Length: 82
Image (cartoon, rainbow, N blue to C red; front, side, top):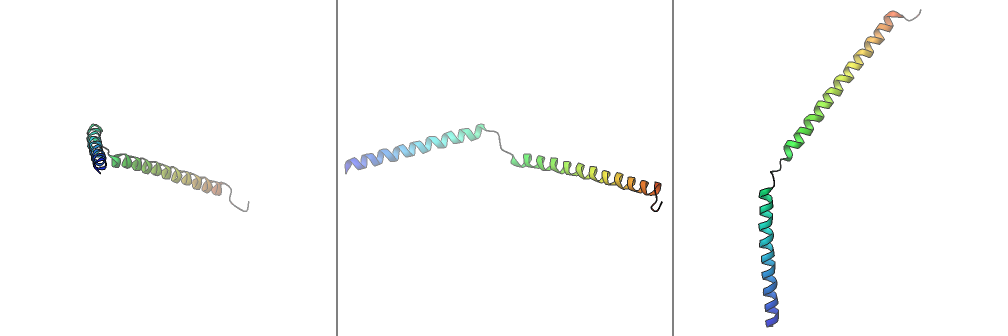
């Protein structure tokens, strides 16, 4: 029975020491690391995507206007029934 008590105590001591060591190392690592700001990166990507979407919409609108102007010009130059 004494052997079990010795091994249990040794195991509990090793576990506590390992947990303490790990906690200290993790705390040091988090203090050295720069702060994480996922919101700033995400907002920059959203703003860039919105800007690209606005540019694409403007380009499409301009193309439709050019097409309609060309169709109207052709209709005036060559009336149907001629």
